[in-house]
Image (cartoon, rainbow, N blue to C red):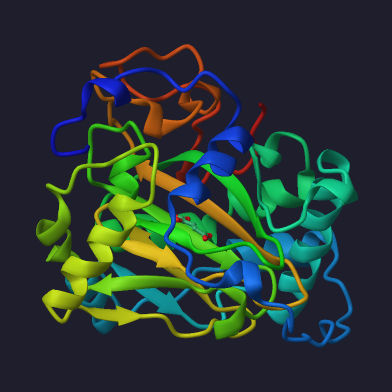
Length: 324
Ligand SMILES: O=C(O)CCC(=O)C(=O)O
């Protein structure tokens, strides 16, 4: 968690998670996004025949081959980008379904420059459930963490709308109120993400979090984000902000410092981010407001208790049939 959560963070978030994101992106230092008028036009996605439900299930159950080099990279850098985690057709189906869910929640005239978020979609959509409870994705996560078994913390649609600014620098240990560092987020774009669209970007190696872990988090301004940028610059920290190709996904550890660029394109940057954690982990003793509405993700579990509610299914090892 934060080095020393200050008194004013030691409270629960009182609103919903969308309000959390609306607040959170105000903490990013954005120099000129508001003045951008010439957005980069992005070609619509190529047409692919949609996979049937059973083809999708097959794809999302097929193990992904991780090499020793992948493991070393993840351990050293705290993140890894993996090509072809999803086939192009599975990306198109994911995008179509996420757009349909986003359309049900967010009126089209209230999206401008926002960061839209939707969680727990797996409870509502049988298609998203396949991507969230996917043995392929959960096994990559468990293997990278070198743990036997992972549970779901939450799924998250992250739609960075055209004109939305940067995501502030952070590590997820700030956000997830889990008493473990065996936490990983699979960030799976539902289209390619060129530089202008705001790809997730990582500071490396993993241990650079030590350089910034004592910076005071200020919930009211951009000072935290600015200070992290300054410290990373002063220490010549390498930042990986490469674009994401179709089907590529990244997996990041909860101590990996990351940010994301602004979206200067005409298309929404839509991503499915699934977070998994080692089975057996507990909720921290003092969750803060930076954890948002975490009780929605671990209902009925109090601080200090094992995070194993019925909304935190074991996703790896997978079980064939599940009832929610
Ligand atoms: O998508 C983004 O811009 C930020 C996502 C993020 O920070 C995360 O998934 O941990």
